Length: 324
Length: 289
Image 1 (cartoon, rainbow over the protein chains, first blue to last red):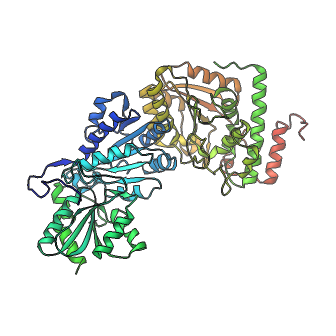
Image 2 (cartoon, rainbow over the protein chains, first blue to last red):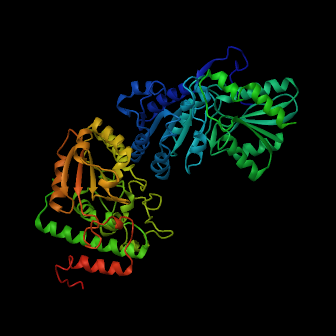
Image 3 (cartoon, helix red, strand yellow):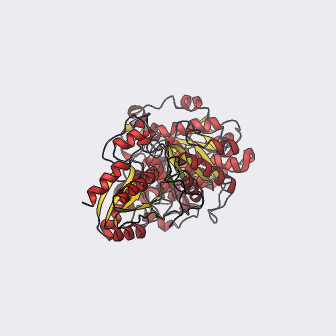
């Protein structure tokens, strides 16, 4: 079993925004490799590029509010041997600049790393315009693009460092709100590898595949179900693309039913990617927890996660429904 | 500065004529593709590849080479023809344009032809990439860089807002190692640019974005050469060369007619066009006939 935060089940579990891990990882990547450059669209502090900008002012580029051009500028820098990280809110990058990412980064085969912060409804009060719920769908559909959805700040740091070392265009999905720290510095991370994060002591009835900030809720849901004698294995699928097909199929074979959990539209997201694998290789009963073809709205993050059925209670209900 | 003697000008003009002939032949064979832009940019491509660019056809990946970004990818017949005449690809390969398995895709794609600096086609994205290259070049080599980043753009594609985002950044960063060349042929698919979406005053727009602006006759080798020389001597700003060209230049039937933007000549029209090119519109009786 993978080692997780020993305080994971405590009420006072440490909480850190996932985007903070990106900022920490970017600084380390910048120290490790001088080819790393950072471009930001007027959100330097908010996307946590500020530490890199301070440490490496010459390698940091303030782009202003130009997400479309910035994606292509990053491509041009990569053409000259740089490893560019471009950050904005996910709604604008890869939201607004999708075609620039497709043509000038993926089609061009340039290793630009897109960091999209403020994904999901947990953005909170800013409301639906700023809550990216489609970004996994629009990035994973592009050939060559790697899509990573870290579950906490520590995994985000590792994902950022790992992305800096590959030649692939990469999308790293980040969240604004403080998120319980699930992993530890010692938890292994590898692009393309899914991991079992929770295995109950009772008979297994269902497998939960979760990503991003909801991995914590998925584990809490599994704990609730365990008390009721229902065994739910929780898998963290840190990389949505390339998806760990073997791990997904193995889990489905073991559990017989799957519930996917993501802070994203159920159409086209991580759950869809899981369903594509299972439909082809091991048809399995599946239920999707996520946003059901709706836009987000203003509210407190926890309130919104609950409203859209992605809190612990919502996940428990979905699981009880699927194993009926 | 690159000296340009009269005999070199004559050499360049003959090369441009040969490239135009290749363009017509390729398009007739391909049965689809764009005619007007490639013909009107033949002089600028020739001046670049046979006089101005620092490049090496035997070593396309040479680190010290200048970079050339073609933003309006649809004019690639002139790019491919020039690459063939410069020795990058075999001449006979030009006849594979737009065919299955060809390295010469309908719009340029680096997967098929890796010596291309960028893939292109969707308009408005080239200048941003050139700006990124110029930023990276300056980061590595400072103000003393001897590399120049060229970006070739169509005038119609300046409708795209992305160009102006890139222009803002280039002006802010004072990218002296960047030269944009706009093919001001005044046409786009739906008509004349000033009817579709007026661009004038184009000079004032670029100046307002903090660019140095030079306007030239895009068919005059000396003016092309002198403009690039001047651009390289400007260290305070990026330079845009607005090259006034005649759409479809060289074939009277095609000139200034926007219908030829995206239409290839058929066999008969192609033969007539080749005859027009070889006799300079009937002004000379050529031994080619």
